[in-house]
Image 1 (tube, rainbow, N blue to C red):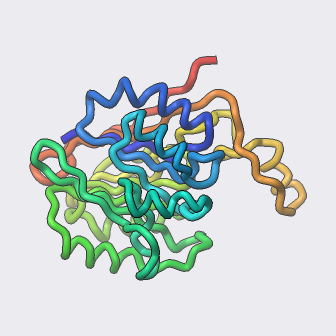
Image 2 (cartoon, one colour; image 1 turned 180 degrees about the horizontal axis):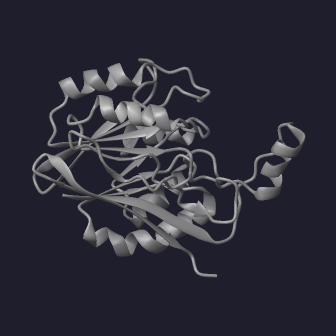
Length: 254
């Protein structure tokens, strides 16, 4: 089974980059998972952004800390292949996992939100994934960790090493060069990277973001525009485990 995971799609530049690359890549993969939590103007997922990502080739869309920025997401979580973090409290709309099938094999996709340096006060991701893995039937499991801290992502990786096929990080928007394997065979990459505007501060307009650092005051958020980049990670799954992990990045021409 060949799986492509596309990193945080950010604003119009990200949607354009996804629409540019995903249709050509899609025939080479059995399943495509996309993090779309910043796809609507840099914050949240709207129905229009959801439609564009699905038309480009996404089988499943994951969210993150901006999951609730648009009311439309509530309906999407109930009716469409969209998941939010598993470690929200019981009663939260939607679900934190989804099982995709290809070639008679099942891929369990789970998303959790990190607890370190994140604003949300969520449940323990270690115990919640523990419980889920004991309940679900699957051939492969992919854990997406939407979080700030490298240490937390690697702690989760080592905790589930050998029990999940791969752990991929999102949220920092910076692609890391650590794609590889842990001792018991679980593939890991700390952050897949951002599919969004190249000339930006993690997707945001440079001038508006710069004010936060120079004045230490809140500034109006504005998504950057212009040339986009496409960041993704390829997983090859076989015999119950991941046998290959490879990151990729393409930049939109000048």
